[in-house]
Image (cartoon, rainbow, N blue to C red; front, side, top):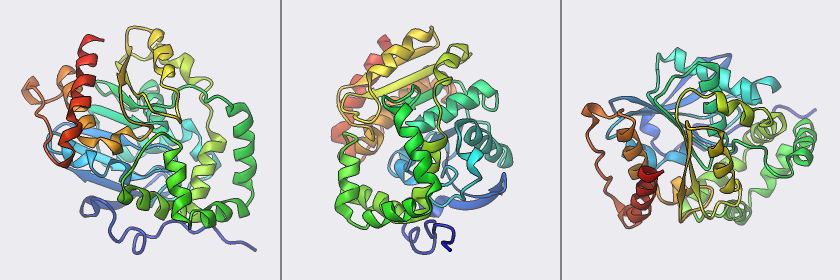
Amino acid sequence: MLGEPQAPLWSIDGRDWPNREHSRFLTSGGLTWHVQEMGQGPALLLLHGTGAATHSFRDLAPMLARHFRVLMLDLPGHGFTGRPARAGLSLDGMARLVAGVLARIDCEPKLVVGHSAGAAILATMALQGTIQPAAVIAINGALRPIPGAALFSPLAKLLFLNPLAPRFFAHRARSRAATAKLLADTGSRLDARGIDLYARLFRRPGHVAGTLGMMAQWDLSGLERRLARLSLPLVLITAAGDRAVPPADAEILAQQGPMVRAIALAQGGHLAHEEDPAGMATLLLQLAGEFGILAGNEPASTPQGDAGDALPAGKRAAANAASA
């Protein structure tokens, strides 16, 4: 008999986890959650996408924490958060579970930012009324059915139900080159640290099982139609080099109504916020100022740091945002 697939271990895999000093664990919805919180000010929720964890915002979050109380968490079945029953890995299920965590820590985010599938969860929460931010911001948001999903979803279901599948994929991830290729196939170029963190997670069958389970339960067919009912702004940031989510999807979604708008970045892949965290922080801070979230509506200051050479891309994107 095969036991439960081993999840990432905090004492081993999390020994030098990014922003570890801001981590804590709490119980909500029958799960143990890994949560990170840093900074003071208006609450800002960052939500990662499929197969990732809080490390996805390792460089972006500290920049935003100069202006916000930044909250991050590992989604159910991802990273160091427990894996729920199958229904908890669906879009609606995850939205309810994340809302439960926010209620548990008494957090009402003024701004929410989601990457890829994380954006779909946040949009669903806004439609359910469990969050009421000034805006929902999607970074390469997966808000429309992915081409080929009709074939892929049943395959993911079969893999999810096969107890050997997570172990097989985790075994393959023991080759760092396999993880590097997987990330490169999204159109992104990460540094060695970023690749190593993803490889660390993919080597654990429990994380792979959570990722496969999320893919198996995911259904975006109804979300696109429901977006027209959003009563708050939805900003869709896309990167030209994204090979995972077609950037053209944002232009299609922008036709849903005046509350949806698209901002196109000339550079970056699916993980643009990891490739250029300083440029992304600049854009997000300028959008926050536009929505009147920052204290006194003061213009957002530009983050300074090693990624400063990437700021022009962010500034160009912000200019596009102002004219959109």
